[in-house]
Length: 138
Image (cartoon, rainbow, N blue to C red; front, side, top):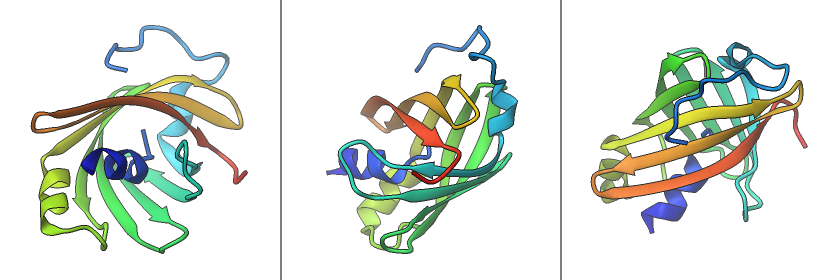
């Protein structure tokens, strides 16, 4: 139950640290901005607004907004910690997110998108996935 919610809610988002440059696009360009996220196997569209150390994720279908603290570990890697939001979630789900950390590694990028690997951990729950964050609406 939490797995699908965790993947859907987090945009915004490998365990391996990056030691290489992206194909012609430095990760620093993705520290701030407005991004569009379309989770795999979903018709939901999120707008992600990142201002270096704070990120908001807006579900355009429901209008629900979640807020995340961003801690940059390097130009291409950061952790996300849940602050608040996700109106429709239960107390158990809120507790789950309060104990969670999401590590994002940007692995490729261009003027139109960036691809990331993500590791989501909350207690004993761990989920790895990858997806794409778009710089323009699709």
